[in-house]
Image (cartoon, rainbow, N blue to C red; front, side):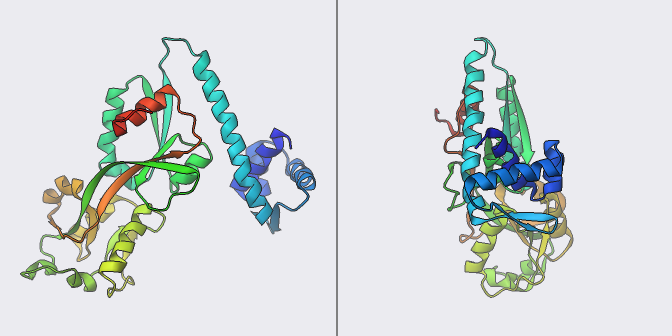
Length: 296
């Protein structure tokens, strides 16, 4: 297998369409089809199922994709390590790409990144907004990802928990639930819940908790949005409720929002994610150490 085959194959895996993939590669669709056919002949089996204008991986293709990404990652790390070796001794300029969800940038992470910019002014830190930070790491779009901690992590990825914060229930100041002398979780059953849409890790974490502690409530009228700002706007102006980290409290007074603490509410843990075989250059080690107070 030639490295060009690997490149063509992975591009088609990403684009899922010969037309888009050929445009991305800067070659004709016929040339791409020929290269993929040569690869399939060499492997001895079909790698893609063609379905009209789109295509999807066969089981054999999925196996090959996993190994091809590992090969590409190793080639990328070889180049990074050689670049570090050949860099002049006084040169400390570098770029670190950090993948994260939009809502995390709006949470405390914004302050964390600002502190990072101040501490390492010689580093260029790019934030990459991604719906899937694990995929962003796999395709080498980012060096590290930062997001809510989850229990089941892809086997190729490591994580480090960096800080935590309790969640709070929030409602508007004159919400009917506040008329009760004692506020219990079951009082929320009759009100819509506003939160992030299903593509965010945060959503699964919160809905899993709600399934255990508010199992009788219906999700039929729940509202999904894309930003923290919209969550706060909806809560401030309707009878909805939400569950957000405590470090958003600074916005509540101006928006006439009341926070409700409850002993059963989960803790929001933030983690750094990175590929297990990731080459750790000196600049990336600096960044990770600043987050974790540990050496790499």
